[in-house]
Image (cartoon, rainbow, N blue to C red):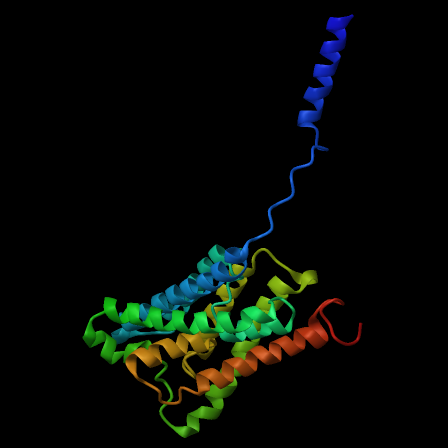
Length: 261
């Protein structure tokens, strides 16, 4: 009887060890490094490599630069980096993205300024890396991959509208794919990368399709090329804010919307 009782107890223990009801210990809450410093580092590194790859693709293709090559390079780079860094920083790499995500409740207030600073520093580092890697002849011909397409005041209106519209579109894709609960999609890195590609293919000859002040600021600072540089701040930031308003007021789910709940 004693042996039978022991076997029954052992059987019960064995069953409990493989049971789905076994509770795993709660995950450790993130420490300060993981909450603050690691995300900022992710933004700096991600932005630096995005700008680096994008600049090199333009500089080294300067003789034959077409829209397809920079479109593919920028889009694929964004997709890979977003997928890699998503669980570290959220993979913004772009000031308008950070502002829009903050306005939609996806980022704490105390992280906004550090994110923006890290993105701009990352843009400068990426542009400097591109300059160090490429020949001076190609670098000079390409203006260091700065946005040098605009040459007259008559082009500003179209370019500004293009930057607003295209940044609004890509920011909306990001917000609906990653922040809005009802429409979240695990394919968001692919979606954002594809949007970069077809935006550059569509508007590359109008404004250069920047959509990212960090991508414009880094090369402009390193190459000292500032002609119409403000367009690539005003347009993308306005586009990002419009996208945030659309999601907050009309397109978001009930929790996201501020009106018409």
